[in-house]
Image (cartoon, rainbow, N blue to C red; front, side):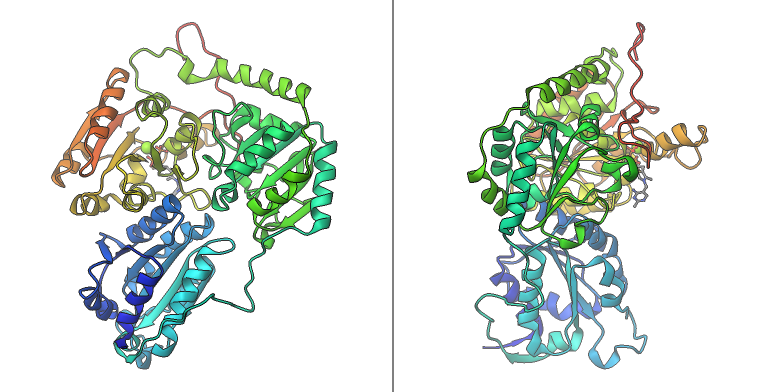
Length: 568
Ligand SMILES: Cc1ncc(C[n+]2csc(CCOP(=O)(O)OP(=O)(O)O)c2C)c(N)n1
Ligand SMILES: [Mg+2]
C-alpha cells in the first residue's frame, strides 16, 4: 500500500493503540493534519497552547499507564512543548511528541519557523529523532513508543520534516518485537543481590520502606503490601508514590520529606534499614544528605542504574523491575515482627494528630486543608486528583489519602505550575470517567488557564477546584519563614474566576465559608457532561506544616504551633 509519510505516522499511531492525540497545527505539520481527515478513529484534541498539549498527554499517560501523544508544528510550536516534556521527563511519564520540521533541504538555513528541536529537547527527552527519510519513518515511530513505555518510561520526540511527511512510499508496518542492541531495560535481580537483601531484611529491627513512583509504574502495589505485612515494615511514601499502597493501611506513614508527616520523617531518621523501592532520593525527601538516616543500611531498587548511588549510597543496589524483585523476595521470606518499633511510631503519630488543623475547630473560616479534607469526604476518597504546584499541592498530599494507584497525578520532579488543569483534561479523556478533579492554585491556574477553552470545546468532564489565597502561597510561605516577611511579588491580582469560567460556558460557583464546601463538591460531581469550576476563597496567610527547611536535617521540622485556647 503506497502512503505518504503523514499517513504512515497516523497508521503507526493506530497500531500503537492510540485513540486520542493532543495538538496544535502549523505550516510544518500541515500534511499530517490534512491526513487526519482520513483517520476519523483518531481523536485530535485542539489545545490552546502547546504546553497544554504536553501536559494533557502526560496526564493521560499517568492516569491510564498508556503512552500519551502530542502533535505540534516546528519552531515556536515545538519550543512551547519544552516545559511539558521536561515535566514528563522528571516524573518518568511516557509521552511521544511528533513535531513538524522545515523541509530537509532548508534545515540549517534559519528557515521560517526553524528551530533545532532535537537539540533543544536533547536533555529533557529519554530519546529523540530527526527523520530524514520516509523509509525510516514507520520503525522510528514504533521505536519511539517502545522506548517511551519500557524500562524507566519517559518522553520521546520525533521531528519530521515537511517533505518527509509529503513523500510517498510503500508502507509495511514493522511487525514483531523492537530489539535495540544498546537498550535492554533490566528485569530481574541477580541471585547474590536477593541474598544480600534478605540478610538485611531479616536482621533489621527498625526498617522503613520508602515507596516511590516506581511502585505504581511497575504495578507492584499488591506485592509491596504483601512484603510490608509479612515483615511488619512501615511504609513512607514519596509525593509520586501516593496511591502505591492504600494510605489507610495501618502500616502507612503517609508522605515523607519536606512537607511529609513528622512521623514518617522521624521513622526514617531513626531507622536501621531503608528499603528504597522505585524512588530516587530527591532533595525534597532527604533534606540534608550528610545527616540523612544516619544509622540505616540501604537497599535501593530502581530500574534506572543512574539512580543508584546518585544521592545516597546503597548497601544493596538492585537495578531491576520492582514487581519482579518483590516476586523474587517474597517466596523466600518468613513473617517477622517489629512490635517495639511500631509502638514507637504510634507515639509519634498521636503527637501529630493533636496538632492537625483538620482536628481543630476554626469556626466557619475557610482553610485550604479543610477544603481538601471535605473534598475527600464528598468524593468518597475515590476521585482521580490532579494538582498544580504550591501550597494546595502539599495540602492535597496531606489531606487527601489515596487508596489506589494512578489516582494522584502531580508534577513532582519539575514542580511545574500550570500542569494541573491540562493534565486533568488528559486524564479525563483517557479514563473516560467524570471523577477527575483538578486542584489548582490561583497562580498556577493562570499559567494554563487558556485550556478552559479546550475543556469547554471538547466537553471534558473535569471539575476544577481553584484554591484562591490571592498569593503565590508557597513562595509567600518561604518569604515569611526565610526572608523576614518581605512579600515581594507574591500577592496577586486575580480575575473573577467564576465569571471567567462562565465566559467559556463552564458552570461555576464561588465558596467562601466552610459550610458550603460539601454541597459545592456534590454539585460539581452531579455535572458529568462537561467541565465545572469552583473557586474556594481561602485564608490568605496560611502555612503548610510541618516543613523541613531546604537542606535542613529531615527531623528538624518546623511544626504547627500547638493550638491555643482561642483557636489556631
Ligand atoms: C512554572 C513555575 N514558575 C515558578 C514556580 C515557583 N513556584 C512554586 S510554588 C509557587 C506559587 C504557587 O502559587 P499558587 O499557584 O497560587 O499556589 P499556592 O501556593 O498559593 O497554593 C511558585 C511561584 C514554579 N513552581 N513553576
Ligand atoms: Mg495561591
